[in-house]
Image (cartoon, rainbow, N blue to C red):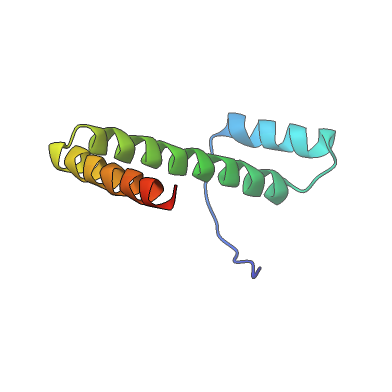
Length: 81
């Protein structure tokens, strides 16, 4: 994957922790930041899914559509049996 350089400011305590763990585990600081961002974005994606499902659960139209879909699915199962 192509890398892009960027510049950012972080609080001193985070920089201190970043330096500490980079030395402790003998890994580059950018590796720690990359892994941390991946974990964070995965959590955001999960939170988006949870939000969308909760929103859909409260939508009467979605419930009707799901029930109709389930009825069609059960009909297909009965025909195959």
